[in-house]
Image (cartoon, rainbow, N blue to C red):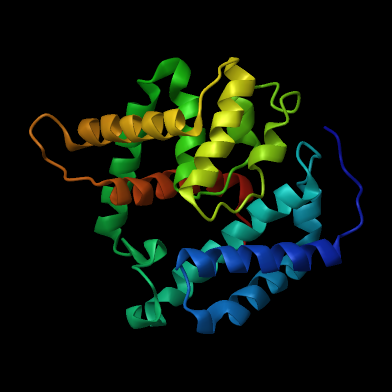
Length: 244
């Protein structure tokens, strides 16, 4: 096991905390009045757990990418804890993190996550591509693991420069970036609109399977995005979760 002995990056930590806080604000996950409190919470946990944070860094990704993942989960913990006290009038749209706080709701969500994971497995060789492309489409944080599962030689193709730590403001930017990704890895010449149609088709395929033969569920593109966000959160929780 390789132990990385790196001095704690205070300046970089502040930069990443600002970026993660802005991400949650733009996504509508927090009201504007909570921005400073969330930032302070992230930095406080960073200071309290800096030895553990740096001890778990293995150098498999850029330090900024690693800290972004850690701080992202710190932010989620804060939102789950504090969101019950917020008025929905302060938010642009319902907060995903506030959905399903009851034990019954959490059980249902877990069952739905399991169903989604099984459906993704049905895409076989395109399962990793589906996860990566939909995470980009739904503006979910991209991790090194997402890139390596899609293409083990992702550094060779410079996929990290195309997708990591990127904030896409428009769908057209997502389609353009993903078309470049697929063209490099799959040796194709797809245009952004071809990627758009692929993503839309894949979303409809997943929704159709989730809804079932008898329409027992009623998913939309938006609610699939919420479920996808929950699924990726569960997948990353154990790796980046730290005790209070």
